Image (cartoon, rainbow, N blue to C red; front, top):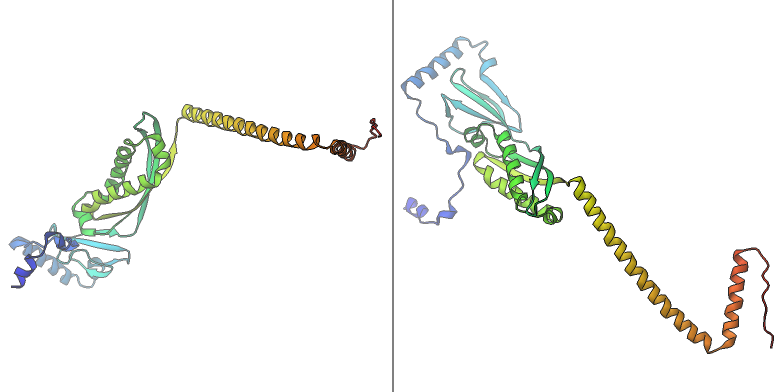
Length: 274
């Protein structure tokens, strides 16, 4: 009844395969003889054997032990101290810390036929030591090469404006793609960042000229709007002054006072006395 109840659940609720999915195989008669010989050798050379059969794994490491070519029961060992048999056990120590690497600059042809050079940085760590040893030859090299091809393929579908304005979205999409592709290798891609987008010199000059022309046009529009506002203000001031002749005379005297304050000189001007 217990097995039936377990099998009645939906398929998507099944737990993800653990690092212990690789079951230990029966070594067979010859394998048992080799294991016995290895144990006998350790007993015969007991005073020296502990120096060769004891392995210490750091806190940030895991040790994958292959006994006669098969994963030993229990999966990855460590951290700490453990024993292994010489001649029959092969040990692969896997670093579980986060690793970062630079994606070399890639020349990419964008969707709008512009050649750009883009580089990035990738942060990843190994979360399944057994899969990283059994499913891929060199997990770090494979992840680097996959990051390069993913960067080229993803940016090849974007235009130049999208690459320059949507860098965060591109980084998140690339991180998700790499994480899915490297999951069978026991790798977790934590973060991807697009570092730099370099444009050809002629394109940079063209974009600079376009930006300068746009700024000049905007400056001319602003200057024209200022002249328009100034002319309206002058017209209003002239209308006010024209209503009172004394106001014009006072404005004339105020202008003379301002000139005398700026320049130490004597100014003579005719004045109509009534």
